[in-house]
Length: 134
Image 1 (cartoon, helix red, strand yellow):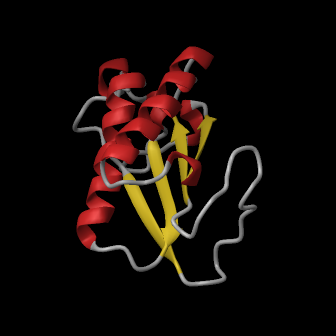
Image 2: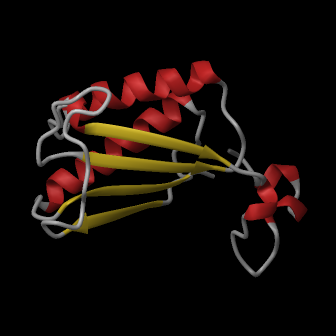
């Protein structure tokens, strides 16, 4: 049950935002074996001056379309799965909505199930394994 936060500058049309979210989720289903219905994403659009980033650090050059994708997972993924995710996400986002690969930054954080409560105030680690598909 990954949780995804997508941060970008304000001003993109709804179709762009949906394509962004859809491409990110597709990469996660393909590379992290996330079930298609297991989708929790928040899009944060920032005013000018609210996103501060190095336009050239470890890649670049980044434009005003810079997008940061922060993924919190409920279980660790292998280095190979993460590498596949980064590459697939960059390819999918370049195709739709047209995000340049230099403008994509992805951060994956692994967590223990004790750090999650999905509903009813119950700790996720206390749920039956079949309830936790991804």
